[in-house]
Image (cartoon, rainbow, N blue to C red; front, side, top):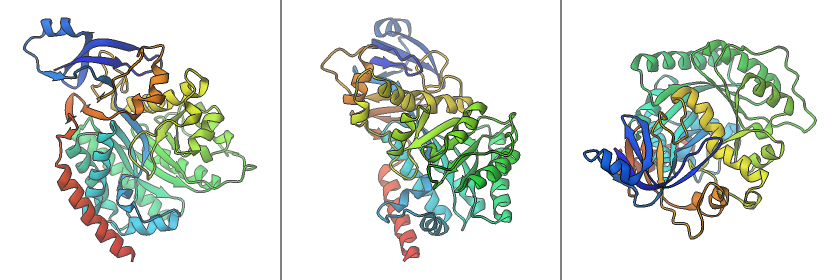
Length: 406
């Protein structure tokens, strides 16, 4: 397949803008980037995905989400206790439709990879299979795991970690490139971080990544005093809500080569602390955050850091699990791409890219989405699932869950 003609934003640490080019896809990967005319002449029999001059960018990576919480919109849940009651009320069918609706929303906003953390104490054993079934139907990449919480009993934590381990073994047998397992933990105190992360690394071994939800409520004076080093041979972990973490903990995570994720307004604080963070949605909209005034500073340091947050840091972590060069448009990279209906009135080039990102490109509608070489959305129409069916079933599931909560 050839995508042309388009303007390509390559992504990656050193982004480039290429005007009036085409991108050739072979199988699930990018094979070639060249002028539209030369590709058309060289590969006359290949399928053309008409880009019509749109901007082609790498798909976004959401590094921290709770997809099954999608049905809670309007409930106004805030506390861990309220979320625990909600998650206990979920049935396997509710999980399937919640995740489907959240992922469809993500596709419409150019999100092609999601790192999910899940809890549903009423159906632990069945829940992860429902998540990957929904992801398979929608056609996006998902890494998910069941979350062991600091408030669980030792027996419950052990069961959660074992569920992750068994789930990972099942996915390895199926060899599904778009679906990955993780070991999830949620800590509310620094002591809990020490205990749960050690248990998670032990359960994960050297084949499964650990995803840590830092649900911390700390005073500014609290410090991280680790009792000992974490396992060095394990895969790089993913730490969410780092805006609430003390510097010592962030430093220890960075020394391991782990990735840091920040959510919402708190991410600004993380940027001020000069932490290299990725974007995560938590329980909010599965869509990249729009730039705010603090980042609309052209080529300033904040703008560059925000670019790395959206296009580099999350993709770099995901690439270790889903394929080298994920999040970049370069030969050999996975073909996870979005077509953006953006028609700039001024020079759109490598030099002006950051200005366009903050003022227009990230606000423009997504017209097409490709994941692993397959078109998931074309001209604003999701092709992989029936959106109306997903919405109707999600609303029915939401009514069931809300009734249980009274």
